[in-house]
Length: 456
Image (tube, rainbow, N blue to C red; front, side, top):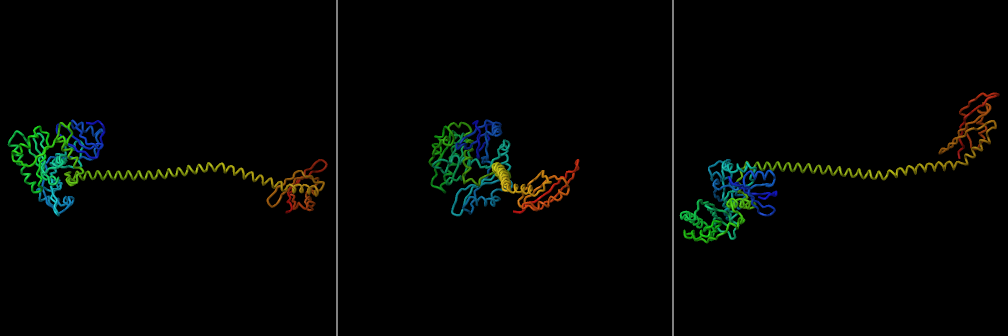
């Protein structure tokens, strides 16, 4: 058994009681048998994920199967499978709920299809499935051993209507119509040294040959065996009346040369795997309806969970995309804002400087007015008036002057506005504050006045 981890979609399995567990599948495109010495080693392989199989296929013994033939008025196997359900009561005296069935095609005529129906009781099938369920294997497809064995052996070119497979003391006899399995029979205790066994086998072959003549002129026989006496079988059978041509095929054509044990079981699991994609057996699944419904429920739950997970993932990705886009926009805005901030600072500085320049221009433009203002003040102010402070304020539409001065008498301070009226530049002088302070030998009068300049 390989130590590498093996993962596959389909695999066939067979438990040989007291011996081993056999598994067959295609791994990385190559067919491979896996042999487990006991059930414990197989379970350990599943537990450690060394072997991972999505779906299992299993073949069951033919001795628990009932086979019947039906002629149905249809041209397709899918329609025939639906019609079989209405014919079941006439085939077996068992309640439909107590058995499971499947069918394959036998022969097709113009408007008539002959099918082979396999019927298995549920209680017998449960006994077969129980050991597989115990080790965690729940088959998705179940077929009869005869179909599995024929699927493995039918890859003979050319195919013969009658196929014999002799393994140790057993002989498996198949008859087919255009590669469709028609009948299967197994003879136990076959002994090449026992004349009665040979005669019994020969009679079975002769009967099949006579039946095959009704379907085809070809009545050749293919013999597959690893028996050391396989070359003697044609002579012994012809001596008992078998007239058909017998072709011998080595079992090594179907199994690897190094296959030394469990040859029959390995043929079964290989054939079961080969039947997976065979359209002839698409309606042959003998899986009980309760198991099939359970599998469908699990698959439905799995699909719901998967759909829900994908929906959540899509919503998360949409949200993440929105957040990422928003983050990019914010980052871009911050970058632009970072580039604009220095420009705003520069703009503010420039605007401030412009204001200073305009103020300076205004001051320079009014320089001659200030000179004239001083000239008029000194020209029209009485000699008794002393100006100690003069504030010149320029506005957009007018100029304003605040004056502080002193004089010897209160009347001179109050009458100061009269001589100023004679000035062409000064107008509307108003005394706003007068304060007289006594001094030795007299008094000092301090006053404050405001004056507007004439309009230009």
